Length: 303
Image (tube, rainbow, N blue to C red; front, side):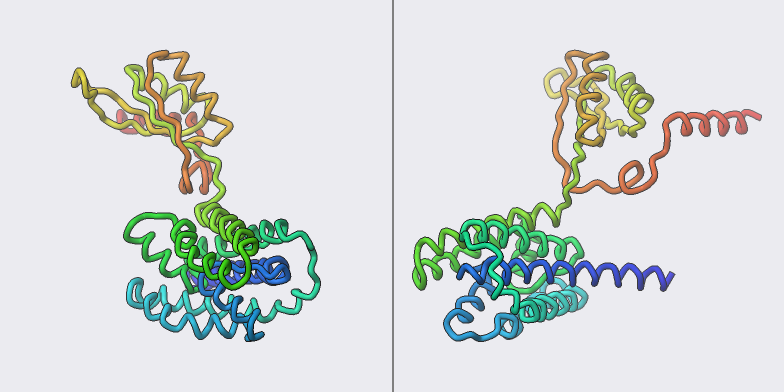
């Protein structure tokens, strides 16, 4: 058991390190060579780097000291430890990879803004997915997410407007606009990676023939269904409601099954952020095998 826990923690810290490395490469390969900024404290650190040549990573360590207190205050010791780990790893990575700035892979500023945002967003998303962060405004975003259920990337993007204003005042409006593009791309990719790129959909079906529809879905598609008890608002009649989670490519098959049994059915199809459990992250159980086990169990009980 302890070995499994250690392996899990080792994988988690590897993901944090990988995310920090990708984020730092996004800065040093694309943003800094084009004299662009990032958001939050790292944006302020980059401004001072342009003015004084102070190492960005060292600055981030200093600026994050009060953030560490907030992490401990609102989320406890474990989160504070993860914040320290993420902050130190990212600060070290951004200074360790600073030598790549000289290569200037791309000379087009817009491409640098986009790809710098993509790489940084993927990196930060991996860190968030590992239940950690890189300090800075990430912690403030996590606090707002915890109490108001607003996406972390969105919160950080709003807070980054201050950095955009500074960029416009100290450099140029053009640099500020390119920085805005980069920050937006970073926020979007952070949300996508942190939430997962799952292509699953959940479907809610209200029908008078829910039983037949559910049996058909389980038998033909090998997907589990859940029956919920409901009541119509107008006539107050009781109704069975089906809840189903399927892959994107299976949505059309569910629609066809519903249309086959009840053309008047009410159906909602919506996105999911993440799906865990049997049939998705665990091995699928076939419907026929389940029926066979149930029949065998009933036979034993009758004897």
